[in-house]
Length: 77
Ligand SMILES: [Zn+2]
Image 1: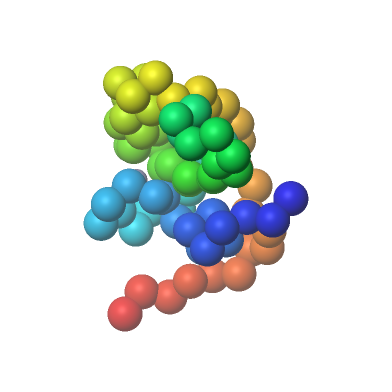
Image 2: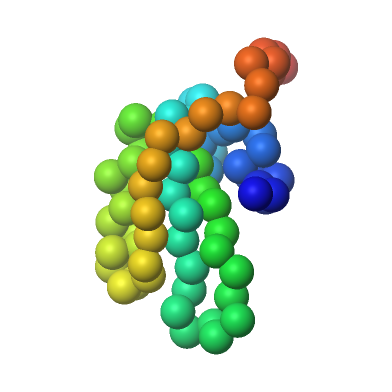
């Protein structure tokens, strides 16, 4: 499965969060008929926040454990 840029980064998708993700959330917008499933990533801190985001909008989503494609370290600068 191809992941988006955000998912490939291995970093939480919450705004301004730079924590390493440990959950992935596969979701789609049912209002867009041909919308592809998108993947956001979440750290422990933001999992409930992002779940609330989709729950509020009645978007179907599925949370599973995120396994990074590699263990490459991302340096902070
Ligand atoms: Zn986060």
